[in-house]
Image 1 (cartoon, rainbow, N blue to C red):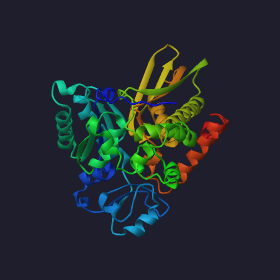
Image 2: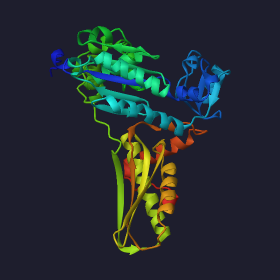
Image 3: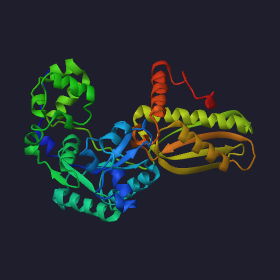
Image 4: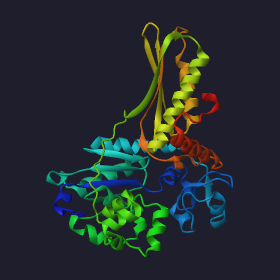
Length: 389
């Protein structure tokens, strides 16, 4: 098996990766200037809670995301501890996306706080680095949030460059400098390299990206499967993943048409709860979050009405179901026979349940993970909430 990488092909693309610095903390500081320059820790407020985000000042004490809050308190007892406000974070995330959407020819919203922008060919008209620098300045001016960017020939190198540029900086990696930039860095800088894989590679004496890049790809594939081959490619600066255009209307939905038109409100509420639970599972399975939920009703005379609500980014059933039922109660006012009902989730972004670590304890997240594992193994109907039976 042979692997080749043509650097001439890489020069055909220019990808910028923009990442908001300590996003949750930065938003909190906009709302409370007393937090500026101080150690700030965001997450569940009880000792059993988990850190969802922290400032650079707190990181100097050894605090990091996903750490138990009790440990964070022991390491940095003088920090400001904040439960977090997903509604505010969602609002500012949209503000940043709006600024990017006004100028970017092609962009992908990768998560609540990061974007990829394909500016291939911009050098012919304006200059890629200059254009991205000025976009970053507009984001800072319009939102007040610090943001960093990395620029290179592909997503992987750009994301790593952003990490090097932080905090609040810029880093361009020219095509011919790709290997010189990557090789001295720790393998921990490679995106999507998990803790277990990191430990496996470290046990083999692999510390730097250069060492990883020199391992035969066939060996990496035997050791770690497809993931091993992917890591080998990234260590060698190879990533042909496209920037996927972001559309606010990107959505998932589920509808149910009754065999006989119905006015059974209790039945319809149960069906909405079931549909919402199914969509929530699909979200989590795909590693996505939603920020908008819609409910649709079609009456027996084919009149169709919808109502939607913007919500903080989430993928948790109990939050989605409560909103869907609220919308149904507001929407169903005519007391006519209903032919069809539906639920739709939109404004989707990539993300995980770490965004919901403002719960006082991690038990809720663990419950969802356990239920999802059962569904994946035995089918989506293997387990349901009592309200959905």
